[in-house]
Length: 280
Image (tube, rainbow, N blue to C red; front, side, top):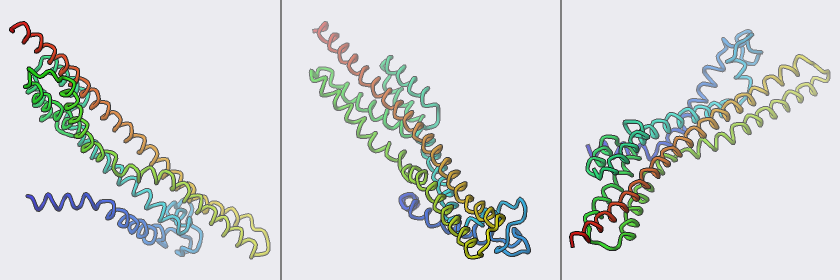
């Protein structure tokens, strides 16, 4: 079990280093064996124009920038799925809002053990952070006669913050790759378009006579890169904003539960002190 766990952790740590070159290779193979298929072109020759409405052949004519853009698109999809799985795992088994509401309700009844059990049932990063705060709550609550309530509150806050620092970075991991692709995909598309335009005009200049059909074909082929780049960039932006909002929602849930733990601990200490004085 330990060996399999260590192997899994090793794969996770090297995920980026493995997936990027792998998907570049896949993109090149798609370009060479699917897009460059002779069946997509007139006369069965990739150097000719694509067959009417044959989009595979049309995309192929975008040139060597196309496999780069395909690899960027594959990376967005792959890291999007990976982030979706990680964030879903961080949320736990049930609805996070209902979970936080349940914890707050149990805290109000001073049922700390039941609240910890709810964390065990929920699982995930949010539940782990809340559970660490509740366990610290229990530990500090045993010191009924302590007059240093502020230090106890700080100790609980520190415990929650430390657990948050351990749990939350995993949620944001690889988002920087998606945001980077959102920026460079459009630029790569424009680069391919500019190079295609240069090639088209150079061919016309070499021919010596203006050829409107050749120019139109050259421009349309060059614009394929722009279309691919903009499409990939748009998908990356949507994915990045979606995951950022999901992480913000989880962070808000943690903050809400943490605030409730601190508030109830303060009320708990005041109640216990008052009771102790009356008994004394």
